Image 1 (tube, helix red, strand yellow):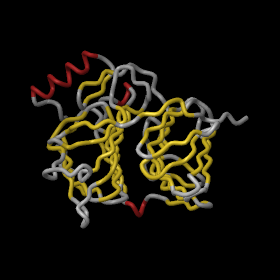
Image 2 (cartoon, rainbow, N blue to C red):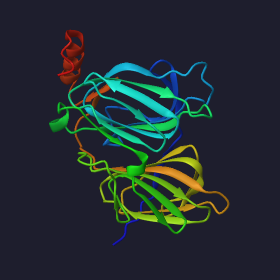
Image 3 (cartoon, rainbow, N blue to C red):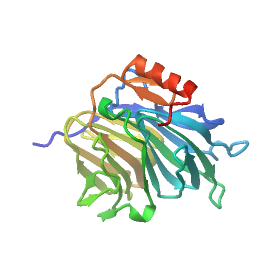
Image 4 (tube, rainbow, N blue to C red):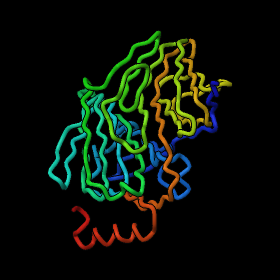
Length: 283
């Protein structure tokens, strides 16, 4: 029996400054309460909105205990890390980085020909059993991401399964669904979501009606859905709609965040800081 997802609450992003002074629109960040388990953070970055005095980025910094997901809309991000990996994340590309037990990396933006850099960063938690696992990257080029066209709807399937397509990002503990959803004016989209999984959506273009009963939501807003197994969305009659849909299985474990680390205990955070001081952070 279908149990419709309704809107539990809405989040209006707030401006924060990270890295070398990058201004971001943050919908939520890591906390001990961890209400959106397994999701820890969601940032919308637009280096040109507001205009930056200089194009700054994220110089070398550590991560442990989490996965970071970068999804580009415009411009590029050059990255490199302590394991010798380098790469370029271009428009439509995704980088899913599993920090595991520890990695040092940097992310520096490069503007598009129009001078823009836009995209999203999502942090996904790791369970205790994988907090200290070996770091790895899944770098997915835009052409490798399945695109599904329905009646008035276009989906890009980054992770998980949707309408017969499977995303190229695999072997993620949270069993995520990560979709870029574009809906033409007046068109509708329905999707089954596992009951008990956390479901959120970030609206960044247009407006639409979400859930049942339907509630109108406009860009730029993060939607947190109630539990259920069916999600319905309809774009406004006079404007298209675009949003990122994120669904994941909660781990239901303690979360102890400290800057770029999220572990299960305070002692593990102290160990991470000690490893940084001792030069043993990267194995």
